Image 1: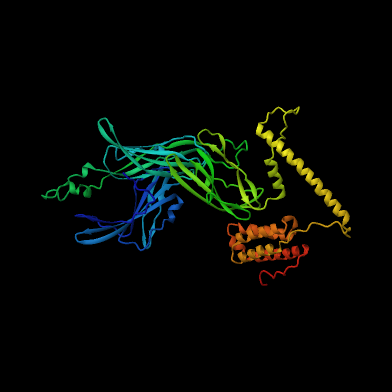
Image 2: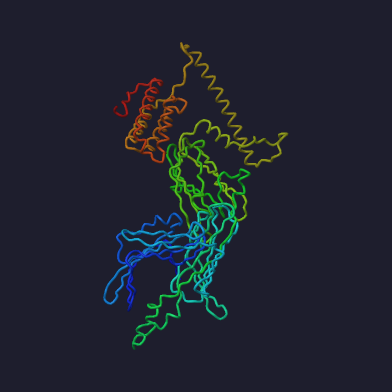
Length: 583
């Protein structure tokens, strides 16, 4: 059995046949489905026109004393004694804002107007649990009566009926104090009570409290019609042979209206239990939280100056996407990290909603060798135990191709060396017995070292003798010349210019890194060149890199002037680079 939602807009044309139907009065009629409603309850106002209206009803006057929760529309065509007539109806779902006697003001629809309607609003406890039937029961239950703020908690509505229901609508309560969202399909089953078959319909909602402290969930209301035994026997074709009466039972039995209410639910919403200790800067209650990371492509090759995409995902069971915090991505030694995009979504599982927040970042190595990406942590509160917990994405080490700075080379050498020197057997402090093959290897190494020392002695002696025979130069403090890299430098700079003009800022930045390496690295750069490189780097990996294309020529012109200075300091003759972009 399926119950229509309040907010579903219905547009239908119904054809009815009757022997005599009262004529509509001219204008716009207004009626309510109940003259007495409970506070925070929902009721329906039906506006009907005789004929087609030239405009939709203006519902603005209702907002003073009522909340307008939804509307639906229908149209009908009637044939009476061969005459055809049409009417339109608007069903407005309302909830009163206060108790007492309230008035639904006159509503206009174009040139038509309705008359005011009075309605009485009473406390929910004074309303009967069921009207119009005793064969239908409605109940609502919450799995956790003391959830955390924003925590997702299952709420189940159960309908039991032993009477045939012709039509029904389940109206869920609404309030700013909580959020209620239906999950999954209705579940229908059968049970036997006192020898009678009872149909059971269950619907599941997810409740998310929006306010802390004591709150109350108003009753759910099931409205509709059941078969009316008193309507039997009014079939006008009952006396005609060949027409079974059952064919027309449903047509002429509009049913008996009924309304069934559930009991209100009281709960106490807890705030962050770890707020006082300062452990949590962001309150995230959930059943479980997990951090994952994935590279795109799955097994990338890391190179200096080239970006690789990393997807870091934050997953929380029993939470919503608005509760997920943003992650911070800091640069690390050997790499720049840029946040490119953030994506969110929710997945429905048997255990509840899994809220997902994906962070797409670009990792750009700035040197070769091993690079450690730092760990990432997210604090959260276990909604079952109330404990403060932390989800951790472990640090990850990547290896990049490129220039290894001297400091990193020393670190690599120290890492490869043994933690403590190996002492030979017989040493007073030695307690370790070495294998025979290692002892033989050490002996061979000692012999080679001795031979190498003898050879080095004779080479140095020969070099000293030759120096005595050569005349002494005027200046003996000759410095070691740097290799000529001007050709390679100009090539990388030209590639950077070409890629910059085409809008490939990341490719241009990669060529600039290669140019900087050939120019001697950062120590050899001027402040202006370093600022230009930093600006190009920031623009290349910004979320919208195209916005910085227009400024790229300025930064590359700075590097072109820097390159000419480098050529002069190296004492090499090189062709002068023209301006990268015309003025």
